[in-house]
Image (cartoon, rainbow over all chains, first blue to last red):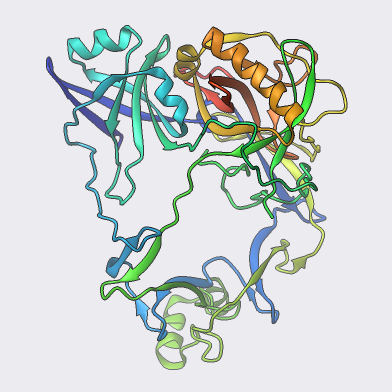
Length: 211
Length: 238
């Protein structure tokens, strides 16, 4: 079932069907596969340091307290680095959200995009439509599910249509000449051939980003 | 010790320098605790072994009734010595079509179309990183207003371009001032015209690079943004 974004502005409610976009939807994908001598696809498995081979589904990830008792995921709370409990924020999908803005386009340069969606309007309020056509950008709360993280999302339009981009903040700062920098002099930009490859996993190839 | 990427960057005056790329995306560290405020840890435990996993049991007992009887009477799905033990650190290995560990698998590249179907299978070609090239980089001269870039591309990675000495600072300050004056971002890339894709790591993804510069007094910020794809609904390639 496609996700629906509902926005509320002075001229009324706007509703959009959200279609995720990314490299996979924009261009062909190249995967790397490990194959045996007869060309058959290999499967990945884990091997413990004492030689026990563990195939897919053979391990369980769980949380335990320091006495070794299993703790259910529903009984786990997340805290920040200062040990402050993070509040679970409700999902925003299906609930009208009021966009904030217009914001300056430079504000987007303080963030890196994590996910992008193409928005197909089913109903769009006149003020929002005109404003987006005038190249305005709005910030909106967007959480597909309840989460402790409140990643900002922006709505913008270009010649191809209307988009929502969900972002994570970047910590860019102005630097001066006298500012100390931590530098390591032996930097090897050429990573190991096998690093970052997710061969035979079904996942998209490496890179470290959400994409 | 912190490791940073480097990039060999050219400026609008035809000079070039190899400078640092410092990742600036915020990484949030979160901890987990139980309802009593006691910290919990994530552990990985053995659930089944090669002899007790579902596939092995289906092979051993092809008849479902026979399997059901065996599960009730003999508990073949549980290895009492292994089940529940912590795995500890593990290595990833490949298993060939005969179920044996393969120590040196051949690697092929499989290209899939937009419909997910396989289009082509070819031997692996190694694509090196092109951030630091032996040949001098080229200033593309393509300046695009910031507002246009953020509307057109998904800028999925950001690196602050940093100096390691005073000469490099002057070099970067000059680029930042040039861009700030024009309120534009410069396209940074590979190739003879300086607008080709950037590849950050060997066999990594291709990105389109844009450089944004600001100046405030004697301070500057120069950020390299990498665009993974265009914001467009059509199926055009980046």
